[in-house]
Length: 494
Image 1 (tube, one colour):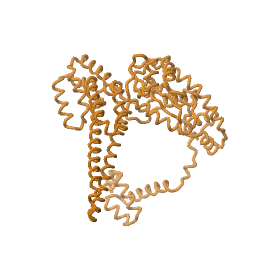
Image 2: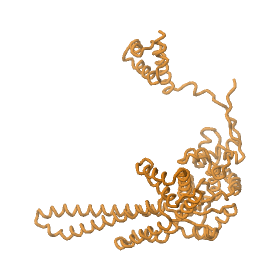
Image 3: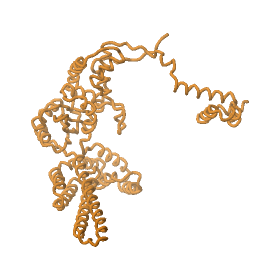
């Protein structure tokens, strides 16, 4: 018997589960199961009982569901918090809040009351938004969102994702952008550089307010435009191939009746058109890949070298423009006009790499080589071969240089993707409303800036809000910032 108890005590959870399942299905006597597993019959019955209890709890209602877990003091302030949470956390519509309050709390509330509550709260959030010091923002991202046919001007800090501008406007011209950027400047906004798309009004307003502060181009939009062109030409080439194949089938059928010569000229033209379309699609795809990997990639050549490569891409597109002017010309013109702005990030990176070279007293070309090393995947043999070579060339300072280069690249921004991310988050609220108000936008800006990230691709952001990431200081819960006291559950005493 001691041996049996010892064996039962050391059985893993999976073995206990197997014993319970076998005893439940009753395909063999309990004594046989106990003998095979080297345990007592009482032990088998215990596992069977545990499994039966778990199944009953899963499939049959338990009286414990009716037990009072805790008491909730429902006050007017608590109901106000509930309404705010339903609107912002649950993305609920006003009529959804009305139905929720009636269903679970047997408490009527009108749509007008919810609207008035949000208006009153908007006054508080506006004061909090306007009190934030924006001088901590080093890289600002600007973009224009749209609700219906009305623009919403947006500005985000690239590092912390803090939204410092969210305003509905009638126009998106230079004066409108200038007024809103001046308001942000009064709060201390003075970035080292800005990233934005090619919007003329946006860039003109930025120049009026910040003067010579660089406004670099957003590489995301031009990359998307180029990829769309390459994919479209590829589909067109497939269409020419399909047309040629159909003509070949018709030619084969015509030959059977001695009329093959009637389609020979059309088939020849189809071959020529197909070859031209395939060659054009391949050439454009190659140019787009070069643009993406060699020019607009973070790890790459210097700004001057990238300028030369950009001019080469533009020249090659211009040579092929006559083949499909309607599709190629807009991309070529965009690259030609925005080239220097799109490469603005390379200037920023060049200055950082120069500073690293001076700080560690390492030749510039070795620092650049360390940067180019990041183009290779760390799982590849080529990466580690080059890694060992650079380690020998740089010497004891290599790992410090490597860390500095990687940090410089991670903190150099090429696109305004955070604004696009903000746009995606706002859409969950915008679709509930046909018309926006500035007060509602102030509320959203406050909530999104003080709501902590539950998950993120960057571990340093998890569990922190954009405001905390911007300032480096913790702050109370967003409801507490509005003057409410959060409910804390306390255990029930007998």
